[in-house]
Length: 370
Ligand code: XIL
Image (cartoon, rainbow, N blue to C red; front, side, top):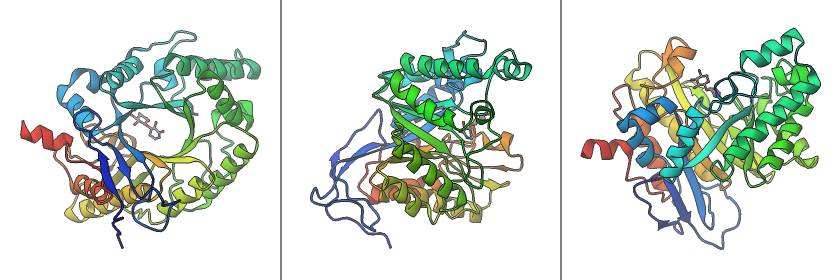
């Protein structure tokens, strides 16, 4: 049952930029989460974010407006990935990453940096160099430290949160031994990455981000064990990101309990890449199911006071990564190909409204009002 916390009230209504960054105040005497729909937080900020395409963000005014008025945080979908940002050794191409960060700075949006250490999207010079033996393990370690340091120092003060390590775990919850970084540097790459990241920008919030960890399952159990171990060893990890790329077959009914157990470790948690794909073509029934799942994800974050942000992996089917990555699947986002809101869009807003968040100024509403 959805409970409305009577003590929840709006304290800050922000329109224009960062419309979906909301602050909710609740009964200050409340301590910790209870099993309620809206977490009682003395003053809670929950960022609603989206992944963005650097190209569209720099060239399409409609896209820009949707990001500006619909979201309070942006994640560069690809622009900060290694292959794009350092396509040749020691030669950085900042064009796209800067475009995203500059846009965010100009419009008072937060940036979630994505991602520093991942076994994918690596440039050929790096993987070939390692395969050919021209880059040895000690050198690889130095290259990784330098990469982390270079990105974080460039954006210090403007990118406040980083997905430091992405997708480190295997499906059974053990550390993924097939991962490029594991194969060459061993499990220590994870702790080292956080240590180097903290040294590069001590103010940044540092996250471990993964997928298929949303339910309570063997992968999230493994993640929980790993995070606990890292914390016990003094590794500077601030948060855990749950990608939440799911299908209309996922119910996400254990997401809330899962977020809470990580939060109870003293960490922030975030939904970082939410989308809900369906087998194509969409049907009314699938769209309704999708809306329920989006609502469940939003409600799970709202129920956990340390859930600090909810980011969708793109806001419209016109730009979604899903059809190319997973043929036969798609329609995963809040707006359809024609940028019309789907039932999921209303469901997310209803969930936010239920907890007192101000979501009246929305991209779609503004657009149609013009
Ligand atoms: C995806 C992008 O959306 C695609 O455009 C790109 O071709 C591949 O990467 N998990 C992640 C994201 O952490 O970086 C991925 O993004 C989606 C899965």
